[in-house]
Image 1 (cartoon, rainbow, N blue to C red):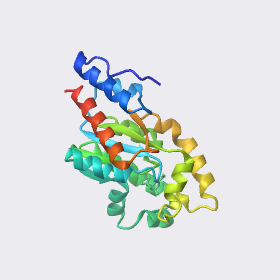
Image 2: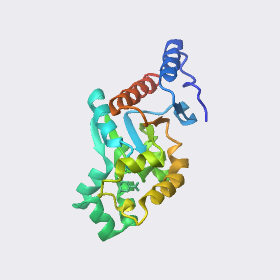
Image 3: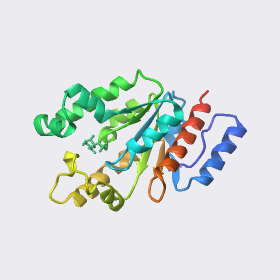
Length: 212
Ligand code: S3P
């Protein structure tokens, strides 16, 4: 994966700032995708269940004075019931269809921090859609760390399995190639949420500035 800056900016200062930030924020890295000239009106957070998208999203939205939008929350509003009930009564395929609908609606929005459901980015069309308007950041953690974060929670249908730890490992392995297509990948282990939010916002602003 590339660790190059955003080419084509022609702004030595901005590149310098990017390098400095990058040096401070290891381990994280940029993918090639950030290099294309595309609008970045919004910030999208993707990554596995329990990685901290909502907590980081809340802080990032406050810093940016953006609205925080949770795709699961939107689906619950559309469906008029909880995600657990959507899964139980309508099935996962119906949930994914709702998720795709919600993703399309975001294309017209601005000044949003989007906290995406954990499986949303595993649909390549969703990822393509997010990248038409957002800087896409993947929050990352190991299966072990994720298990520690979700083990006492009961609201996620996909983790109500006989062996949830194996479910996490398998799902994460399946989704990793998609998560790695984010513009920026941030390891959330050993970092306080507030530092992660700050990092994400700094990189979002840099990416936006280089497009101005
Ligand atoms: C899912 C993650 C959940 C929610 C649904 C399915 C997944 O969101 O969208 O339960 O497939 O990983 P969170 O990542 O916010 O828990």
